[in-house]
Length: 229
Ligand SMILES: Nc1ncnc2c1ncn2[C@@H]1O[C@H](COP(=O)(O)OP(=O)(O)OP(=O)(O)O)[C@@H](O)[C@H]1O
Ligand SMILES: [Mg+2]
Image: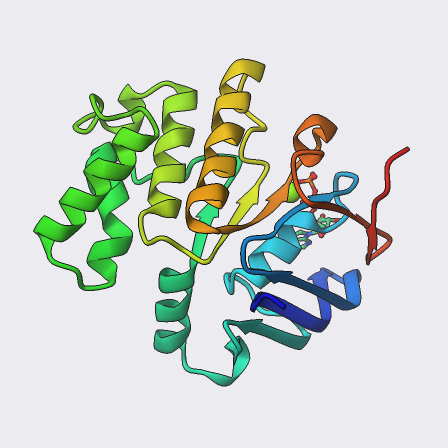
């Protein structure tokens, strides 16, 4: 059996909106093993992004446990949590979230510098990954000087530069035309092939979802294996 990389058990998340409480999900369980590819689908507002934020340790659940590489994220301090996230997870969002004042190269170097790697090691690895995503000749461009697809590829390069065990991608191709979206997907699949990187990918696009090993649907606060129409 493969190692479980990321898992949550009995996760409950409620938002307070003035007097109203929005219970997004209750006692939700999910796990992903090394090298697996899982698509999460579901209607707008179903809680997909909320789940991704919790799984990535970017937001806190009201109840439940999240384990990354066997470590309960709630039981460790913020510094260790940040280190584990940095080491084992990569994030890609619908909007790239690159730092505007830094070049593509510097943006991709960032996770390595945070992990206290030397500037030279970080720059060498960042160049290599940017090359891999076809941006080898855009190193010095700032995000505003890149096209939408190029920005998304730079964001993927940043997500993969640490060779994470798992990439969490929330509608990574939502803003891209079909051809660029296909190229970006091709890149994720290659990463999975080459490095056994697990993928959790939120998408509204069934064509993309079908390229994963499993599709799960988030509906009424529960996850169900989706078996097609
Ligand atoms: N910070 C917040 N405060 C209050 N309510 C929130 C907050 N974030 C999300 N919600 C609510 O939680 C529910 C789930 O939101 P979420 O962003 O996870 O949906 P989603 O499945 O990602 O939708 P989409 O497909 O549109 O991206 C929604 O009803 C949303 O309004
Ligand atoms: Mg969302």
